[in-house]
Image (cartoon, rainbow, N blue to C red; front, side, top):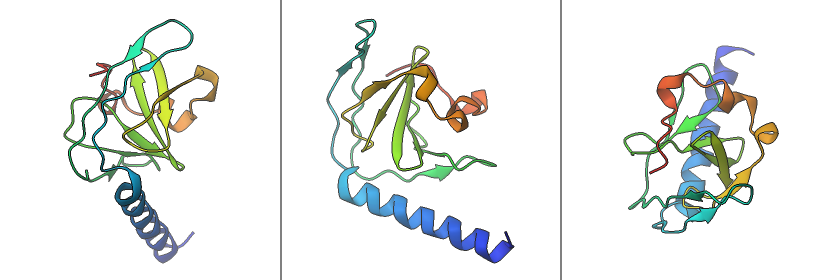
Length: 121
């Protein structure tokens, strides 16, 4: 893929993310979702207003910077790691649902450790 095509693809992804955030990602989140397998609770995250997302270098994974937990956007969904479990949602404010380890996208599993904060919130 040539440089121009790659740049246009990235610009399109950024525009898509902006639209997703504007549509459903700017509400406050107070919901705690119970992990169906072991009864753990995913602590709520309160996001006030829209948050910028940044692409993690050499990946197609985006993250919300400057918050106390890890929230990632990848291929149309939001993901949150918590105590070696993963949760996903259609919006960055949830509702969050447990995702089986075998269903977590490999791009998220392979993220460098400095991008994955294990504290849940």
